[in-house]
Structures are given as C-alpha cells and as structure tokens.
Length: 166
Image 1 (cartoon, rainbow, N blue to C red):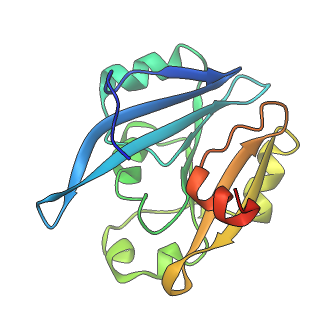
Image 2: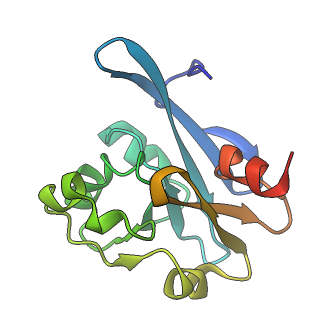
C-alpha cells in the first residue's frame, strides 16, 4: 500500500467520510509505511479522527470547515503516535485508545492523558451512526475498526477484511 497524492488533503469517499494520505513513515529508516487518517462526520456535525496522521494546521482548518473535532481514535498499537499533537491543538477532544494500548511501555512513556479505551463508552457516543468492532491482532493486540451503517465504509479495511474474510 502506498500513499496517494494529494497529501494532507481531504478526499471524499462517501457522505460525511474522507480520507487523508500523509507522508509515509519509514520503519528502520528504510521501509516506507503509508499513513492515512479516516475522517468521519456524525449527524450532529461533530468529527471523529480515526488513526490521525501528523498534525498540520492547514489540515485541521480544512477538517473543521465540516464541523468541530470531538473525538480522536487510536485504533491499534501502530496508529497512536500522532494523537498527542492533535490533542495539544484540540484539548477538548476526547482521545480514545485501542484496548490494551495504554499498557504498552512506549505509549505510557508518551504521557498521553487518554480519555478511555475504545469500547462500550465510545460506541455509546456514536452509535447507531458508526459501528465499532474489535478484531484480534498479532501479539495480543486488538484493532478497533469503524464502519458507517449506510455507506458501509470501513475505517480499517485490513482488520475488517480479516474479520469478514474478504
């Protein structure tokens, strides 16, 4: 998977759903890892950022044209590192960690004041508009995948394809 131009720009994929590709990260300084955020708008106009990419003020302003950003979701052990920068810019937003994520040494050292884990309390905020499922990952990790009921847009296509055997 690669990142696709335009970078750091909202690209609509459905009603109230956008993706934003950002510059790739490089594992071990060599292996390019694509970075993509899914932006979802709830009926009340508020926004959920699923797997935030690096913070960019212009991107934040672009997203906020559609509504206030109320929720930041770190859906798994790989996609949490940009939460702190977004939270610094959006102190009122609720930041959600995948189950077990806060216990990881690297995450706890980052001093992120997580609101809670993704689960029943987060699902209560956005159901029935967005369904949230948990998919077991490697090494006892859990991925939280979101989908909208009308558009059936998957916010974490890899996790859902495993779960749904696509």
